[in-house]
Length: 372
Image 1 (cartoon, rainbow, N blue to C red):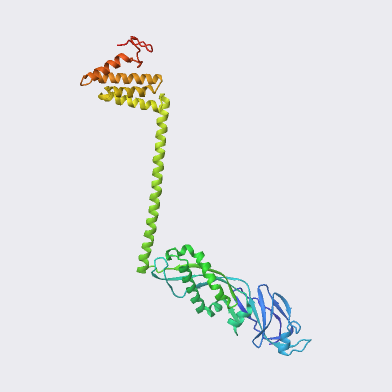
Image 2: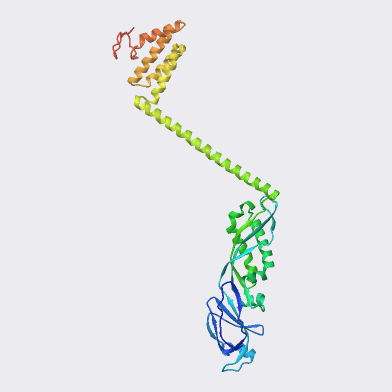
């Protein structure tokens, strides 16, 4: 096989490291490194120079360590034996992961032993190519995603399960609320795993939990699940009842306001006030009470009527006087007190308008009614 003069890698983005199949090169060969790539030259298992994106000519001036270690003469074209690795620096997303067994821990809210599983996706990117080559690649020709994950599988599984359990306990997350906190749990898990992945020269740029598998069907788990949802239902029912009570109280208050407004409007239309209405009520009670013939009650009733002070007041006063008279005359008893009240009422007040006669007036000056 002849000496290679063009050295490059045209691979996919699911490969971390690719070793050029040729190991015999010539000084003056062209090394082509694409964007998001880095090339490292090895000689006798020792990493010499690294090359970033661009075209590089392999000469003794460009790689003095190669000239020294391989005893290459300066000037001209000289063959040499070496290894060239291409490292893919692009971010590789959507790499699936999952726990190979259940995560065992004590549920932080109900404190019962729990086993769950988890799975999701991660994103990785090579940040320190030399560290990756020395720790993982060795003499391998290709390091793919699956090969890299297989190399750290046992360690990664242990760290994922430990970090997940610690995150749930530290945050006091109920197993029944985990699905609502997947974003937060993913961030916590990523923060805990970043140092573990970084020791291989790889950065954990994204870590997401997409599924948490719970022990559905387990009697102990089902018992606590029913307890949790019953507690949740009771709280919600109490909140709903509280809201209904508030609505009922607001409704009753509004009804009272509406009724008061209706009564006020009725008084306005019929032409009397609240105080006058109360006077009507007093007159009605006095008319129904035969004992109202007592002089004290007469004074009180008429005093209230005098407070009205309008033609309506006169009418009410007259109604009071008439009611008193009727109660006295038509009562079952005809006591001297009642006769005195009747006489006083008939002699002193107009039977039509309630005017109080002065002295020996025989006709009411207000309405002309004859005094009895």
